[in-house]
Amino acid sequence: MKRLIAWMWRIIRGPAQWRVLWLAHAKFMVGVTGVVRDDGGRVLLLRHRMWPEGRQWGLPTGYARKGEEFGATVVREVREETGLEAKVGRLVHLKSGYKLRIEVAYEAALAGGELKIDSFEILEAQWFSPTELPEGVQESHRSLILGQTPPA
Image 1 (cartoon, one colour):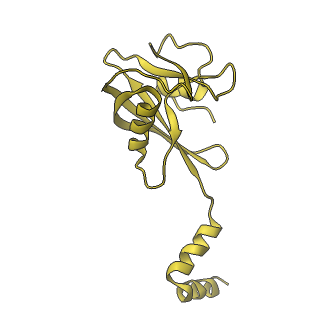
Image 2 (image 1 turned 90 degrees about the horizontal axis):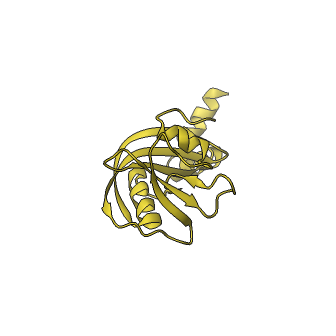
């Protein structure tokens, strides 16, 4: 059976192979998060309008666009949601996650800009000490801030 499959694979070649692979594998959205810190080590948290009540505080987060590098997603999302500029650092989390989503998180540093929130998505933006986070922070984001592995 394996020989037959290998023989058929060699015959179909090119675009047909890609189509078979496309149909046979899961498709994912890529959620990208930035752990943005200022010079004092405080972390940028946003109170997200569309997140569940009681769990609205979290890090800048969004979905990567087709062809976009994930670090660029962090920079874009921070700029869109807060007006601030971020410089992306090291990758701190990568996991195929909830349903059909891949979760990616990077450390990032404040690089400039003026705080001006996108009131459609964001209710509030504040800087917090990692040891004094507000109530209602997403647990997975709390773990990222503290340098721990986020819960499953």
